[in-house]
Length: 334
Image 1 (tube, rainbow, N blue to C red):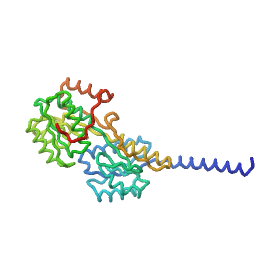
Image 2: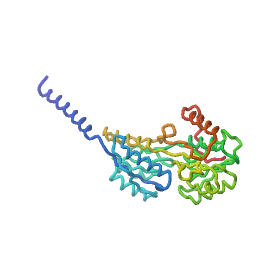
Image 3: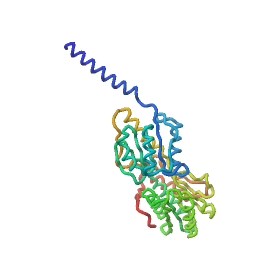
Image 4: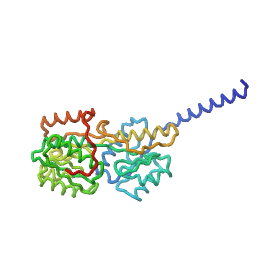
């Protein structure tokens, strides 16, 4: 082999080694994330996310150092876009914890090195550097219906939702179907307060259902005062409410955002390690009860042994796939 060719080969090998070694040396060790919240930490959809973020930041088991929560609350529209723009200049990941894909669409090409996240209903799959996460909680809601259908004394139960969005509708419909699977003649009252956070309106809606005979209420609008006052059973949503009103919260349907956060941060890390652009999903990535993202947990109120046995049986079948329930996102018509 001619000496010049040998030099070329050696140079190519050295270049390849340098590139590989440089990529290895520059593997990220920390990630900076900031969030935009539709409501704020008093609202359990947001607080459940913040709690999961704090746990991951404290445990530091991601192979990345993650900062403690940084967020702006209660912003929509142009205000949300302005906040997200500021965050995109300073943070690696901007987590928009609701329907913010309209804002991401205007920002993502300007900040290709920033990973944007949107969650839940009302978003558009944009791909690129937008990732879309959803937590499905209709299976735990089905279990709540089974419990209410077996435990009711009045044969009337209720559900109070925020907006009739597909995610909320799925849960309410599953709750109704769960109740009717064990009690076909049960009467279910349903109301929506048309607000993400309006405890007085939620109180009035639950009060009306109690007046109509409901003795178990799936409270998705986060107001338990009527249940406490009237001594009826409430089922809390998005977090474990049992310590809030132990004599009135019969069960809760908490969310765990850690699997979704880990998925997003792994996607960010892989892109940074490979030097490739982000490859966000067009269809939402669902997490659910089977990976620990949603759950049904009993509170401290009494529940009969027969109901507990039935709940264990149904939950086992839901987790194994033996029992398949239809995801119905239409507005409930009990």
